[in-house]
Amino acid sequence: MAAVTMIIPSISTLNLHFQANRKKGLGLDSTTRRRLNSLVSITRSSLLHPNAPLLESAAKHTVDTFIKSGMVVGLGSGLASCMAIQYLGQQLRVGAIKDIVGIFASVGEESIIQEKNILKAVEKLVFIVAEKQYKSGLEGSLPVLIKSFNWMETAEEIEDLFLGDAEVWRRPSIGHADPTGGNFPLITREGHNVLDVIFTLPILNLDAL
Image (cartoon, rainbow, N blue to C red):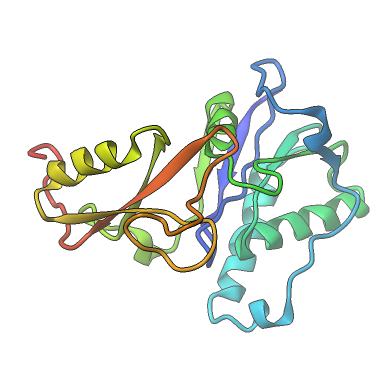
């Protein structure tokens, strides 16, 4: 059975993972596996987004091209992901695709390690991205997964690495972001923090860095 993971960055930059290889072992609980016997709900306001028609077309094309009967499908979230899952559900209902098993990349909480385990298990990786998401250098915000113990020392080391070209903030679980993550910093299922490295200027030469 071939393995494939499809990542569709959506409006909220979340992912939809498709993968199909049980032999490599993902270490996921059986309770996270669900049959795709219902459609994912997409709000009307989401469909009013200017990119919605393009996202829907890309989602359908990706399902038609890469998803085959008998695959195990990793399920993410976000607008493009929901469109692809909804279309996949329609294909299941009419019998165009059969025997699909769903695996949630994360269930109710952040689990970056679980998502990475899914990515490592696949044989083919397909991306659907908007043209504006391609950058000539490293810019914007880059998430970094770190151990919670002595997180401030790690943050300072990362900040020193970029010598004023970036700020390092700990991601909060609720509320507004700030350098320390506020009173409720995000802690993953595995007990990690997420640092957002926010670049003030694009890093054009990664080799020099």
